[in-house]
Image (cartoon, rainbow, N blue to C red; front, top):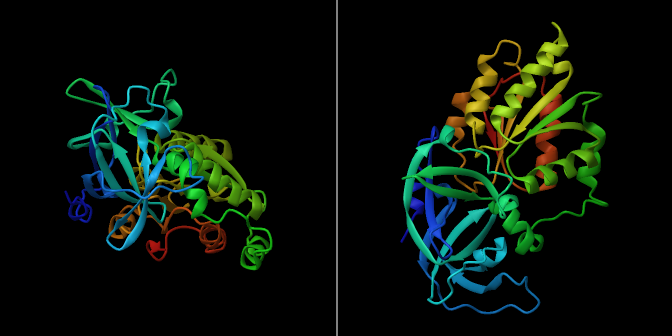
Length: 319
């Protein structure tokens, strides 16, 4: 079942979710834009000393892909492993990975505003970025970045920046001063990764968990500025695209439509690999887009945002 052909023409104002189960009636979901293919669980080669949720590796289109038991990774106790199950192959954070699930249900289309923050009472709250209701049934949207970071991403992402000459040069080059960068992301792991890069750059930052919270914070800062330029306090905004309540595109559009915020530099930072909608980013007024997560690439974009002057001048640069 190929899903990648749906990825190119997705309506950015609406969200397409691939629904699946891990066993039992509870439905889970991930964004269709991250999905390349769905298949019956293939033959796997086991890996020694791998994370307990890693089932093994398989060949997918000539590439070695790690397959993760998603139920085990998120601590789902009602998992059904009686049959072969299905594997969802996707591209996340510059890495191809497979998630083994019990069954795939369907693709559902909804508005971003219909996705809400997960209740903190949920036993899986740390693995859930949002929830929605379809046909009166709760659907939990998984924090794929957290799952990857805990199981396989440490094998692919360079976190040790000691002695990185380019990064050191970037840290010396920026002009943030006392200004802060606003980081907007529903994933705790993504916020932590971004904060680590900003800490190493010596840049102050504020955090928000979704676009609505970020917009409220920016407007509060604008009121506190009492007529001063908001850019003297907030240097730039780094925002995820997929978020509950208000997504990154809607946040960017709202910033551009607000007279006090409209000149802020906005970087859209997303785990969607190779399918960033640059035209949509330009249309809503983003200054640049970047695929997660690589510290030096992010540092380049941050320094660019801090030094490029005020406001959107050249459309959304992509990398």
